[in-house]
Length: 480
Ligand SMILES: Cc1cc2nc3c(=O)[nH]c(=O)nc-3n(C[C@H](O)[C@H](O)[C@H](O)COP(=O)(O)OP(=O)(O)OC[C@H]3O[C@@H](n4cnc5c(N)ncnc54)[C@H](O)[C@@H]3O)c2cc1C
Image (spheres, rainbow, N blue to C red):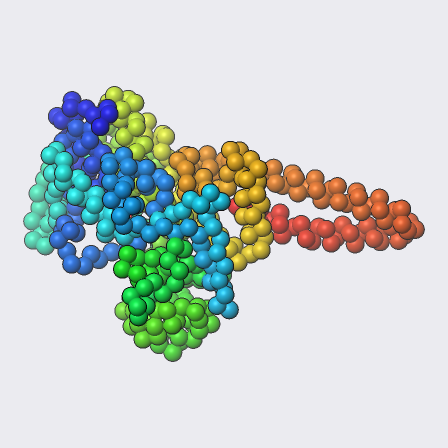
């Protein structure tokens, strides 16, 4: 690979966590010649029959794909495994459906299996002679000053101590590395649990072994306070994720109450999941929490760094957690080469560059919850989408819808928000100008055709009616 460096072979890097981001980061560091040690709490998932954990499948888009391409595994994941989702398929309460394409150019997102992607990345990491795996190594303590880590074997409870020149925490939303870093001064941290939980259910393949719904869509059942989505799997089943407040989960205490709830909210999903399976799966699971994490900076000196969910866990409503984490690895890699592998420069530069973007997508993910849950049912929201697409058609370079920027480009996330705010301003001004022109036009017309009192009355009615129809529109355009 271009820019590959051998002078790094004396630098030992410990990557803690061999999930999606950690195993990718191990590959990127190996490409740069570092002596990489990958420590993972669990056993090697490639040897397990069943891998416990969250979200079976994920939506992958441009940022994740670009990172996979960087280590040469994009094809084995996208071309040979992923299922394209070209549009959202909205399921209304009356059972009717409507497709909303993601993008006028036909770009799509992909449903990928978490386990599959993780296994491809581990196998790729294993192919580098300078990567050493340490499974069943749970980080339980760390001394940043001496760069010493203590690991405990979760089965035997044995502990061992290791050192490294650089420790990279890729150990997820509840990061043990971050916990140790927080003991030091000057690290800001906040976490936020939302009142909603999620539960994964399954729509099996139909009796012919085929998809029970049109496969190239992300299916969404928006229901105000609740929402359900479904992503296709390779085996023709669907992973269905039910999002709702914990108190609703807790109120569904019997099969009858559950079925009434589904009859009322998701009647078309009942025959797809199957009544018996729905009851069995629902009561075998429980609603799981969703957390949003922000921290800053992401490094301590030249010894410690956080990537992925460890640095910026987000609620899953923009489908960007993994994509953003994978892009973290790309950004870090770009800075390594730019700053000639000087870790004392690269780590602070990484924090400074990445923090505004990571925080922007954490915020956007939270806002998108409103969009997916509620707005896809709103005609003003749909009108705004159409308007965005129309303006994008006329000004393909300067008017790019927010979702397109986030999902189908590598535009820094914070710039996506800035550009969207500019678009909102333009739309506000244009709406007001149109409204103003309409009012003046109305005044002139009514003045010509009636008496003064008649004129006043008609003008008043006109302004009220025009205002009423414009206000909801103005409200919603601010909500992206
Ligand atoms: C319901 C749901 C749906 C989602 N859908 C999407 C989506 O469609 N698209 C998308 O881009 N993102 C999605 N995400 C987000 C995505 O799952 C995460 O952003 C992604 O998994 C982050 O990867 P990571 O490697 O940083 O962390 P993780 O995947 O959490 O991996 C962390 C790894 O560290 C290991 N570990 C933990 N603690 C220790 C320790 N003390 N010592 C050693 N190892 C440790 C763990 O075993 C694990 O292997 C979704 C998340 C959820 C919850």
